Length: 369
Image (cartoon, rainbow, N blue to C red; front, side, top):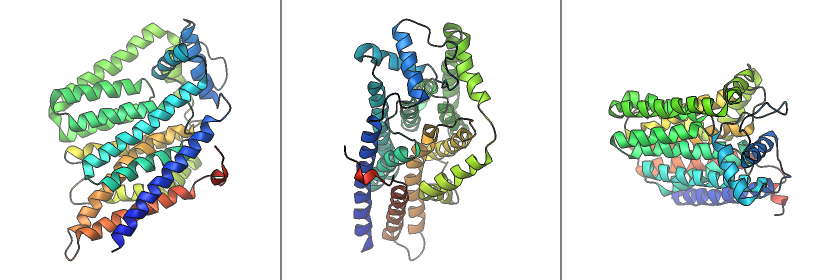
């Protein structure tokens, strides 16, 4: 009797999450340009490329961001076509976030065959991204990187044989040239293939080695010595141990705002059927790698909120899939029913939405578009 009520509550919460995301995006688009050092750096690099200047040069400011060449090259195309307005870059990032949420819904629908879980996954991703990544409409390379990387994971999951391995290697390699955190997705895919699908391990590893390593060597030769400074030296120099930042990320984010998704994912690892086994085992591997990437991101001397987006994207995928697996296991117990497991999933989704809504800015409802 309670299942229809909680299902309706989940759909209503998903709708409210989309409204909240839209309001936060409207506020973000209206922010005075440029929003921060990353936006200034992107616009500067794009205009330099349009003027046929070098992509990388000596840093002109102490807070110069570490940017890989993929996004500045795409930004230069937009700036050359539409003019030097940061708004175009913000719109590109925003469209990438929305496309990422749609891709998440496709993945969850494939893995669970549950439309409610799929819709909730996309809504949680959008809302979580808006809350944890700062300005959701800020021009950033992370959204496009995540879109390409998750697309590579989907190719590896759904395309059999050598072709699937090579296409995944291509997409993950391209993602790495947009943001270094894509390397966590590539590592997760390697671990998964090593344990579960060694037939595609060789073509995937060779493809990744040629495209990823070869691409970096090529860029080092073409873009000059400052390329290595921005890609390697600057990020490594910014690392330091930050215990409070690490604990805050675990306590406030993983176990707070995203706590239900995190706990359900941890519970799924205790099931008799290990979640990393089988064709869908790639996603739990990606989830673990994403958490590792988020933990490392907290150890930067100047951490950016968008660096946590990798955890939002991964847990929005893995969390609902884990809920489905836990519910299936609960339904298989003696004297249990499928409806009991479904109710547990719906209650967990409602609780996760409540955790997200609790983090909404106090003045959001008073915002006027």
